[in-house]
Image (cartoon, rainbow, N blue to C red):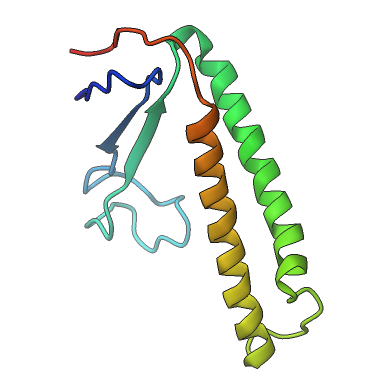
Length: 135
């Protein structure tokens, strides 16, 4: 994995992506609504993305915490954002009221994301450590 050094940061973070597309000719009869036994081509490549933010010994804890925080944020956004944008009582998707509420919801989302970035930049501190993962 390539590494970029930022001496002013105390974060260790990495992202990797690889192609995991099954080969043409693989047996796939039980996958979905297949009408033939063997794959004859690739519709879209399948990729896997992995993140590394902590040492290997903390990988399980980090994965579980990341999943829990992600799920909680999704549930909170799905339940609170329509109320805040004023589209909670609308019966159908479409129309002027929905369009105005949707635009408002996007602005609220942008503001929350920006606030999160500013808070992260202001509060993440720690001793500078050499990059142990650099190649």
